[in-house]
Length: 480
Image (cartoon, rainbow, N blue to C red; front, side, top):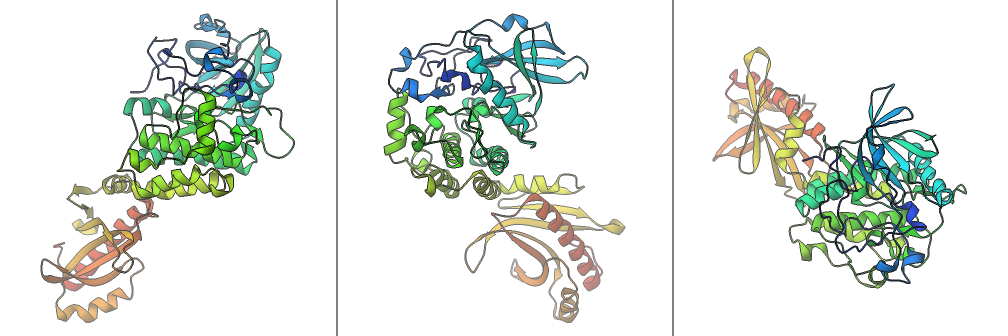
């Protein structure tokens, strides 16, 4: 169930817990023995709240000596007017800010207001806080959380963000233990489409992880928290300290190499592995132990932990987790493309057909390995269409086959059938043996890995239309 305003853990969808840029100066302990959510006092798995840290400060000392950030109470602002907004409820906090569900008093739109926590070192925090707004605002993309405004009110700096009702991907994982491969792939495909756009613009996110992916109640995923983002060209390098979330950091980052598109790709690989198995590829009691594993330990095959993971999903996660940056997919665009293809191949046939039939007036039935659809035709006629998965006879490639019976294949119809076949603009007319008898069948096939609902919808309509015409031309009947 989606969390409601006022009942969110720190990684709430309006702004996930991943906002940690300020912890370069005030690192929190990410290995708290019993962390709890401030609004509801529920226990939270410390792994999910792994802080974004300045590793230069934490590698040399145990987590419990890292020093806690000062938590100044801004929660009493809930219910008050704040500049052009009414702050309706407290949603959560990150390392340098508090987040409220708000309403714009002039536009009447819901939004999330992220207010910089006042501290003695506020000047050091302001630049990374504003950097998040600038980085996100530079990306106009349906899968990026939109920045509406930035301002200052009574000495407090704030960002107005799009409010995303729903939950973070991390919260989804907590509830489910691990995600179905298709669901994990589809959500990451959406999030990486945003990362691909960032990479095209020369922007590196530096903190890609499930708690920074917001999933709307309608299923749309959005990438958030650009607080650590930096440009890899153009001279914008105001945030140069080594930072990130240790569970998701690439080996080269622990070795003081700069963040890059390749390190973002590594974080995608950790996220995919985590969603598919419910476990991190590497775990440890502190950042130093994690660093050694990321640098030296081979990545365990996710299929050893969950054997049912599709091969193509496991292999992509492993490629993203290669130790050497050059051995990984080149950037977010390449990973997005591969996730998109895997998403199609891992989608259940029934779900794929459901998506294809959306908006059509048809009668649909599920059978053991195929879906039966009855499609209305003009003049009160109808045509039955079957959609099934099968293997190509030549190379064994998985196919989606869409076909419809046009009538029994009597010899007297052969010439007419060949003449009609030459006029077809979609699919082909052939003879197929069904229950020991030959039938004329209209059919079309698509590769399973690249077939999408739009293609299936178009093919179902065209196969039904032509099969009905051929049946009428050959026999004058409406039996099939």
